[in-house]
Amino acid sequence: MKKAERNKGFVFKQFEEPFQTPFDKLFDIFKELVTHTSGDFDEAIDWLRELDKEFKLTTPEYTIDDFIEDLKNKGYIVERIGFGGEGGTDLTSKMEKALRQNALDQIFGKMRKGKSGNHKTNYQGHSDENTGDFRDYQYGDSLEKISVTESLKNAQINHGIGDFSLSENDLVIEDTQFKSQMSTVLMIDISHSMILYGEDRITPAKKVAMALSELILTRYPKDSLDVIVFGNDAWPIAIKDLPYLQVGPFHTNTVAGVQLAMDILRRKRHANKQIFMITDGKPSCLNMPDGTYYKNPMGLDPFITSKCYSVAAQARKLGIPITTFMITADPYLQEFVDEFTASNRGKAYYTGLGDLGEMIFEDYEENRKKRIR
Image 1 (cartoon, rainbow, N blue to C red):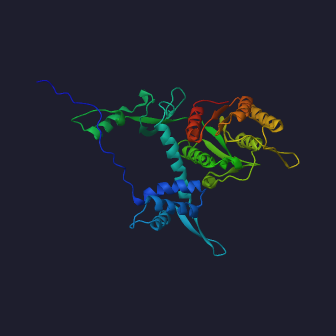
Image 2 (image 1 turned 45 degrees about the vertical axis):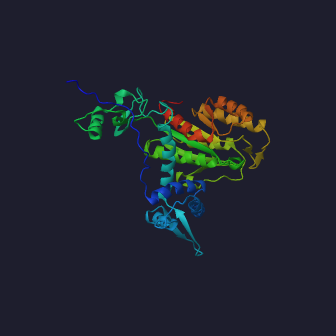
Image 3 (image 1 turned 30 degrees about the horizontal axis):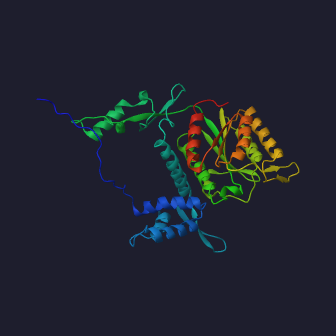
C-alpha cells in the first residue's frame, strides 16, 4: 500500500486577539501617556479619561478609578503628602522600570521582526562565552549555535512523538555573551527646538535612552551607560530620572556635552568607549572663560563650529568615537555634521524619529563585537 503523504502548507484561521485583563489593556496605554507627559501622573490620567470617552476603553465593571486603585495596590504609584498638606501622586521605581521595559520591548521587538540578519545575538571568533540561557532562533543565527537537544524537546512537546516534525518555531539557540565590555555615554539634546514645529522629538529620544539603559542593565550588566543632556550647559542625569526628562528654553552647546562625555569616559576602565549623540539642530552656544555664554542661533557660526571640530578631534585622540544621530533632514546642517564626523573619524546617521531606536541598538551591538579604538 502506498504510504499517504501528509499535506503541508499554510493554515488560515480567524485572528484572535491575545487575552488581556482590563488592567493590562489600560496599563499599556498609560505607559505611553506617562512617557509623553514626562512622568506627570495627573496629566496622563486626564488624557486616559479623554481617550476613554472617545474609544470606550472601560466598562461599568472596571473604571479608570478602579485602574488607579490597582496601580496603587500593585506598587506602580504612591500617594504623596507635602509638608503644607498638599497631596499628589508619584511614580515608584517599579513604574520607572516598567517604562524602561516598555521602551525596550517596542524597539528591540521591532528589530527582531524587521530586517533579516541586521541584529544577530551570536558572533563567531570573538571569545563568546555561553550564558546557559536559551532563546528562540532568529533568521541570520549561525546553525552551529542551535541547541539540538532543546530543539528536539520542543518539537516533541509541540507536535507529539507519533507524528514527529521539526519546524523553525521549535528551534532554540544557546545564548552567548561577549567578554568584552563597553562604556557608553548617551548625549541627548534638550534645546527648545526639540519640541518646535509641531513635532515631539524629545519623547522618542527619551524612549531610546530608557530602552538602551534597560538592555544594558539586563543583558550586558558589565557594560556601563551614562546619560547626559545638553542645552546651554551639559549635565548628567540618573537613569531613574529618564521618564521625567523635559526640554528647556535652551540653545545647543555641543562642545559642553562632548567635554562632559569625555570626562566621564576617562574614568572608565573598559577598553571600548563610545559616545552616542542625539540632536536635531546646529550648535548655537559656547561657554566662555569668563563664565558667560556666547550664543548665535542664526546659521552656522564659524567660531562655534570650529570649537566643535576641535573637541571632536580631542575625543578621537582618546580613542572615543562619536556617533551622531541627526533626527532632522536639513541639508544645510549636513555640512557641519559631516565635518564634525570627519574630525572624530566617527559615524553619522541622518534618521527619522521612527528609525532612531533601531539604528542606535544596531550600532551599539555592532560596536560590542570589536575594539573601537
